[in-house]
Length: 175
Image (cartoon, rainbow, N blue to C red; front, top):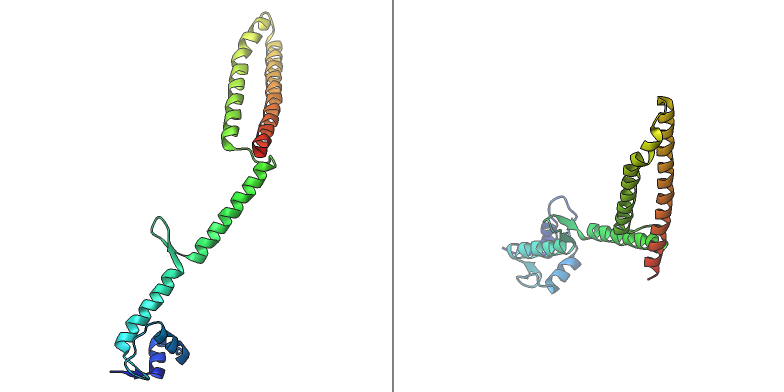
């Protein structure tokens, strides 16, 4: 059984779709679609060829993620573009000293935690001798003052540490 070009245009388009153009069929023939004779086509040979063409076109517009999900390449391209833009923004912030590398931040926080620990552990030994023969209110006032002084010292250390971290980040950015 063979069909003419107009019937093939309708067959390949499918029910409910506008028929393909005769020019499209001519291009398909140039691209390798089988032709029975001049102006006639075998739909049983043309349909599988056309389906293969559509699948190839669809696969060209699709990609597969590492976890096996099929994604449109335009979506993958959009995600890649966003990731690149985010990376550039972070690099620029790091160069300007607005962003401190995580390992530097962790190291500074570890140093600060060590200082806090030492200040708190030294507090009882430093204050205990002064507490002898004090009333409850005097003891409370002395302990409160000592804790506030320790916290004030820590705040100054933290500010100094932040300044050092900022300076280190700027030096690394220049290098």
